[in-house]
Image (cartoon, rainbow, N blue to C red; front, side, top):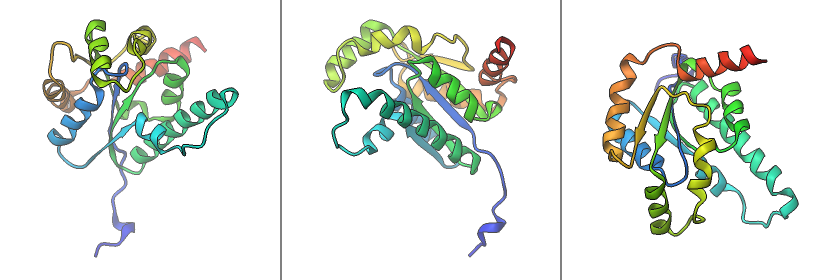
Length: 193
């Protein structure tokens, strides 16, 4: 058996899927796991919320609990990538601070930022069909989720299947340009600050 100290150091790639709830991020992530070479981990933000105990949280503390959950999620993703694991992230950047936090903890050149878009009518249809989401949630998230305006690649699940989106992402990876969207967003933030 190989000694752990002989495992070569490397940083993992982060394929960061950002879109509203019901936009198709999880379906694209599942397809990517089948299509991409080497092991990838799918880390959806919903899984972190599901890990929380079912003990009731008083309404006045809910924002703090959710904030800590998202911050922990971002650091878990960063930790997996720092340990050399490739990660597919499934997230809803529906608040500016979430993007800023991700920009501060992830290595910008190792992130492929993917905008997952979907027409509002289709989002509403999917919400009704799923039945586990608040009606209109995706429509309310739509403007803020894509407010930063920069992606490495975008897909529209109202036009393309999850498989087609995943194939386009896979084809994009080998020649992805620099600076990455995350690098440009970090530079923009530093220029403003």
